[in-house]
Image (tube, rainbow, N blue to C red; front, side):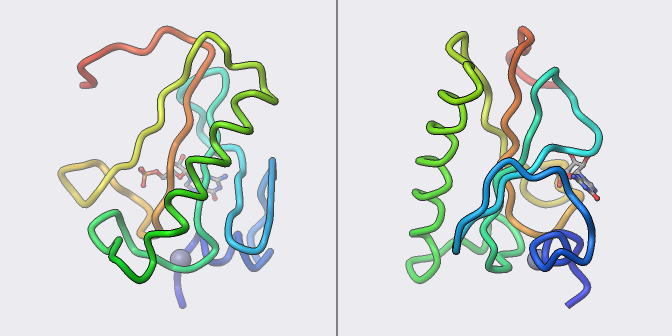
Length: 112
Ligand code: 5GP
Ligand code: ZN
């Protein structure tokens, strides 16, 4: 399948990994938008948040458990933002579900 993040999961495209288990991979974003910016992805190919359903949603809870654990390990006590872009209007550019974690700067709200 021609999916960049599936290729990162397969090790065909290199990445700066933070964490890996059977279900999830966390790696630093290649174009960071904050001093800390990493992505958490399911290893299974789910194209976007719009394709989360009763069959595949368990990994979403696991992703948020992992985000809490990594935030603790990276000392993000001051807070962080979890972002999931969906589709063209949502600003999604890679068609494999991913959760951005941004931290170590003051993040504006509402986003632009
Ligand atoms: P989206 O725009 O789909 O929400 O987020 C995709 C993210 O993937 C972007 O923040 C972009 O910088 C990141 N990205 C794109 N290509 C690569 C890559 O080859 N390696 C890594 N580590 N991140 C990438
Ligand atoms: Zn994929």
